Image (cartoon, rainbow, N blue to C red; front, side, top):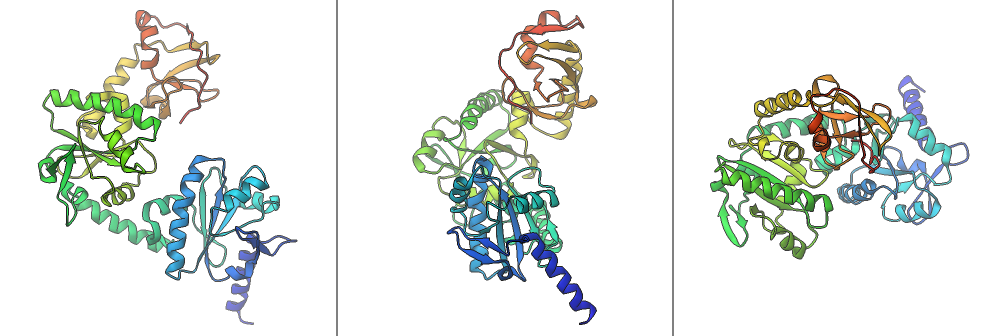
Length: 412
């Protein structure tokens, strides 16, 4: 046997070591049938670390199943193996039953533990792509599936580089009309009227991905309506286009009635294209497009929460000035106080001194930079959430006690 044959046998051995154990040379199908690992030889494999109890896994699994089925129809040599973090055999069986691929048997705890450790899986859902030799070629499979779908296959570095280059070219030629128009539709709607997309060109436009059956969407929409109306009163060139992810037209219609801006028609395929193009993983999401048709920021929701209408026009220079002003203003706040509800000391941090993105444990909204933070456990609150309590004593730099009974909902 020559050296190349030895190398192939060694690589095949590595592949089998990943998916078998000393007492098991098979995987299980959703129906419980045993399938020999040998049947996966020569295929690219996705190791899918997931669990039924986590909502993000519940959301991603049908997306992955759709891509998997498309690849199978195309004859792609690709398989997925479910590595479960479910609570018990019953939960495993129920969740695996929603999947069209194989799995490590739930009872094989050692194999699941070894795979998790080998690939340093720290969160789920996680999709590790391994080649025919058992070597990892992508560790961010979830991101790639959301971003590129079936086009990501065979998930090699070369293929992803090609897709990134295509993406870059698309963004360089991006215009508002290319984003919102199709060959058969050159308009958006405003309630029941058709409005040409061309009338939005030259303005700052927010693409608002949202849905009725989403509590955070309902909460953010009311805030966005207030911001929009304030900017319109000031005659600012700002518009919003609602891009629905509602599951039915009644939900779309009911939700859109609360909005004073434009929308894509319900069921328009452009919505799916834009979700993928902007890699929208959660709603509500607000993508800001500048007057030149290029993307200004994908963080419109966070910026509206932080600055309200002052965030407009969302440019880097404008936001930098706002952040400097916020940092300067925040220095007049007490440097620390004892949070009676949280039972720990909170210290002020700024964007220039270690502050980063977080979710406020008081109002559940996003924040960045300036915050009161518990170093011990990650509890963080907006400065504005304690502003009213502190405003009479801003000039004093001493420990304060503020009675907030709400417990921490964990940070970002």
